[in-house]
Length: 187
Image (tube, rainbow, N blue to C red; front, side):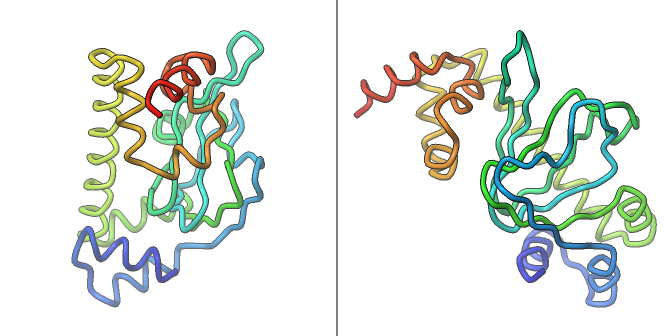
């Protein structure tokens, strides 16, 4: 759990006793490539930290999987639109490669938020950062060309190297053929 400890300490100051309480509420899980962590229709009840590997959020439309979000190591995630209101998820979450996760159950996260001011601050900072990334993604879709969106994604080598073309194209909002043309043009 050293990766999580370093991640937490990079965001907030937390005393050792409080940190030990946080860690006592965490468990580790190995997820094989292709295995779903959450299925559409399930109610999300956990938060996750990616130690290694990566995950994708996707939904099904017109008998096809549409990838909407991809995350890799040192990211916290949950299916917040299911977890917070406790309603069935609209998304599937799947490991895109062998993935090691640290898991915190919702009830434990709620307890930690109520008991540790530093942890509440940590959670706020994590979710504010996620909101900024989502706003950036929306703005990019509205203001950038497909090639410009792809070039902004190129700053994340894991995304380019580990996500299949079809899934990457979906995240970019283009067809796989359009992505191939963009890649050829940039080379």
